[in-house]
Length: 144
Image (tube, rainbow, N blue to C red; front, side, top):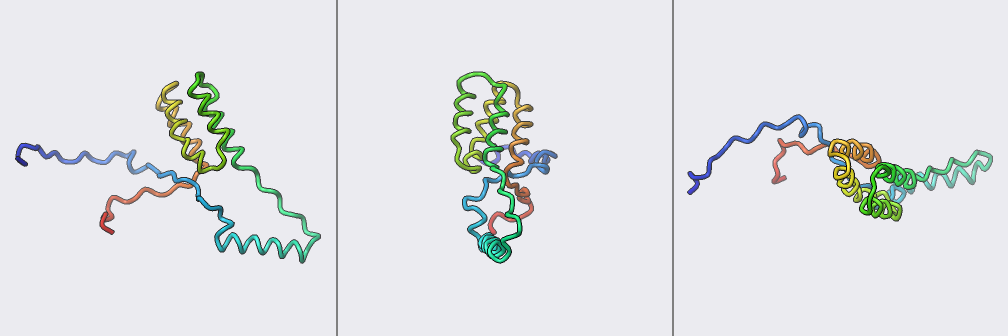
């Protein structure tokens, strides 16, 4: 029975496989909950009490609002109910993690309306807001 199945050699890996980077969702917990984040927050409070004449640090930019605006801009030239529904979902997102999950929907809407190449280009622009991880090596054993 096994002789009926023709074994073909695996195709050589393409250059695309080696240039692929895995985009990860943002951390579930903010970095201020780590020991390092708590230490930095404590040091800022002590500095503010001991040296009140020093200027207060600038308030961080509302990153979520800026990323939402980029997501909406990536759909701005699309017409129809589906892209508008997606824009509504983007505007209701409460975290970068929720936006990370909406990336595939943005890709799908742009690919349907325009082209796959344009969808990949826009997704690459959106992916810069999320952490990346190097691809796993194919040389490592899966049992470990």
